[in-house]
Image (cartoon, helix red, strand yellow):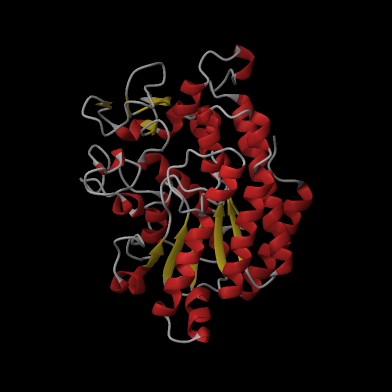
Length: 380
């Protein structure tokens, strides 16, 4: 299914031409990063929120083994997309809001992303009968924390607008957990489908509020191909063979659902862009950045596996929701760079780096990220 109509791509092309003719990117591009989202961007918030005697499983090795050589609260063996973006921009890694210091916030920005976070508020989801949430720090709550902190980072409203105008806003990925939680609760598919417009509306409201506060450049990732996730493949194992893509082994109907979310998100971004022509709203196409890994794994060095997790416990996909990575019983692959998936839900650092490169190159960002920031970096 093609995620963009020709009309949309043509509009984006014209928008690119306009921006390239009026905007030049100075050295540094952005002075800081402000991030909102879930575990795909969490750099330590969830771990820092947890009591010392009840830390989440990603607070233990082998998490963090590849780059940091110790757990950092990131749900991977190493760096995430947000980390690669920070390195690309010449900025420090974005510190988590919880447990971070004002000094570090002023130097690099702030990350409000929390593992397990939803776009929709916990109260709304509970009204829909979806009560089993990992955290109540939804996108709305994260935005509220940001607004509370902002006056401490800038002295006047005009200074705050200047700060946000010179910063890169990463809004997401967010929304995936609004679907993940009910899927794993066994909620029927129609109920989950009905959540999509609410999720998209919540993301749209957050973008508009950030623009009103002074944000100009906002990078908004879409959903990933969840039908290729070991966690979902395990949950729905034994499905009808017709449900699977015979080339990749992924579940077609789940990938179609992710694409439908993304299509609605794109429409919302396009609508907001028309309302705020001065803003630079960039759609990061995580779905199409990741799908080539499943079609041509050897091309990317994924010789160990694309549908099996590197760190997991048993079964066809090396995933068990009851025995998670971080448990001493769980086996870990020798070379995470040869695997797409790290722990059954999240990607390896190698995968995140490839997604980052795909977004920053411009082949999977609309408009191209390089239209606004091209540092001509050497390969990291």
